[in-house]
Image 1 (cartoon, rainbow, N blue to C red):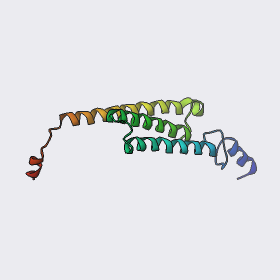
Image 2: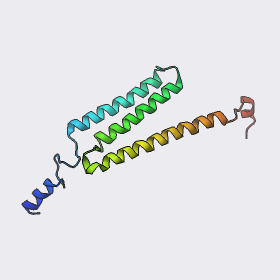
Image 3: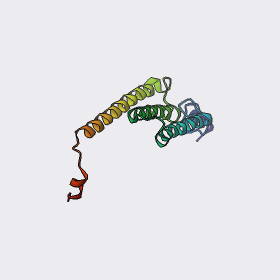
Image 4: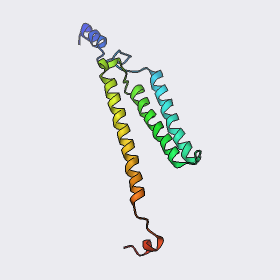
Length: 131
């Protein structure tokens, strides 16, 4: 590859090892994302293991909210999605992803609630005679 072609590749964000304008984050961005991810993982673990919140529904809602925040952190710090890159298409993908996550989480909670409500309880006596 000629020197001019190599310089042109770096100018357009192709093939370099350093920082470029097309979405590669800095070391500081990756460390920030990692620290936030660890914190957003440790908090739900602490909430469950320490039984910090007595109401299990509130605990579940807090954990789901922290999961959504963690997804956004991953998308911003590791996937480098923002309103400026790719002419705004990555931000549109972020909105679409958030919409899918909300639908998935709400649907999962709805299904688990209805399964819990509509399942017939089985007594210990029935369990002993089950095949």
